Length: 190
Length: 190
DNA sequence: CGCATAACTTGACACTGTCAAGACTGCCGC
DNA sequence: GCGGCAGTCTTGACAGTGTCAAGTTATGCG
Image 1 (cartoon, rainbow over the protein chains, first blue to last red):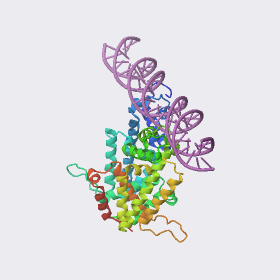
Image 2 (cartoon, rainbow over the protein chains, first blue to last red; image 1 turned 180 degrees about the vertical axis):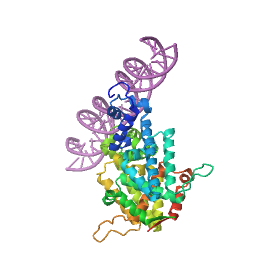
Image 3 (cartoon, each protein chain N blue to C red; image 1 turned 135 degrees about the vertical axis):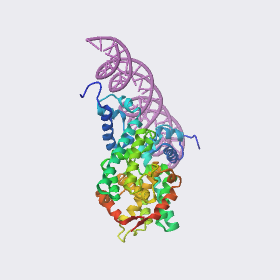
Image 4 (spheres, rainbow over the protein chains, first blue to last red; image 1 turned 45 degrees about the horizontal axis):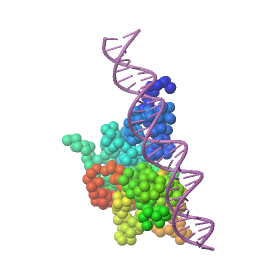
């Protein structure tokens, strides 16, 4: 199973190897050849499945958005509290650094990829749901973000970004979830 | 002045060329050789001034932090309103996309560079001042961010990041400053 | 004027992503 | 059972990249 010519599920193996590499040195430093070596195949094998380096990163981002949507949905359904959705947002960024960093780097992706668009839409929907906004209207149209949801989204996204870029003081970096809950106590929307 | 062996101010010219290139395709796609060609020098000239590719990006980031601190200070001194400092934060990100994107990508920089650290500290100080926090105490120690300042910082930073990554609906992207002011009306700190 | 030193160039190296061409394998219809 | 075919992966090549070592040129200082 390991060394046959047809790998079996090379696509899966390449994505896993890519995620691992991204976790270590970021998405922009990803080397296709290193990923291929990590999966035990020749240097040009990834191109066959993803076409491109951007194609591989797009696959990673799409998978990331799917997992992200799952995490947000879970948090909302477990608690019904939009604060907990915000916590889940930041927790996902911490626990899935590689996915998160890839997702929000559009210049490295194929933004027109249908899989990516679908997964992005799932995340957006989960976010709208989790921010307590009205569901899609009878015509099926998605509601625009209102100012509250936009502010909350910006807050958790910025918190995650600053945290991961190392811009917070050590006390915050040591217990990010606690810090975020503290912020939530002091900030009121509406 | 243009084609002599000693350029005169090659360092300046290289940074300018780098900023221009970053503005077009992001900091991770920067090519030292392209920058050198843009400045009209040989491909190895940049290494002499910056040592490294990361060294050039570090110089760009340091300059960015300095300009950023200036912008925040100007906003605070002109208005004394911490909301206007937040607006200035986002406006800087929009108007100086290349600098801003480079500043918050630590994996591309030499984080131990003293110039970078100094400029970062300036920005941090401007941010603390602009968030209405107490000045450094008599011992000279810097105050920690409290929950309000941390929340406001996260909010404007996340807003800028999501805006520049293209994650906002068109109505927001068309008038980001208006959208941010709308958010500010609905969010209360304290 | 001469020389040390800084500024820049030249050439080379290993590495990268991408492409074209070929080799191998499993499967489907006969 | 068997032939061919489509999909999977490999091999080899190419231009481009960052970095290093050695050489060339200019500037400023004694």
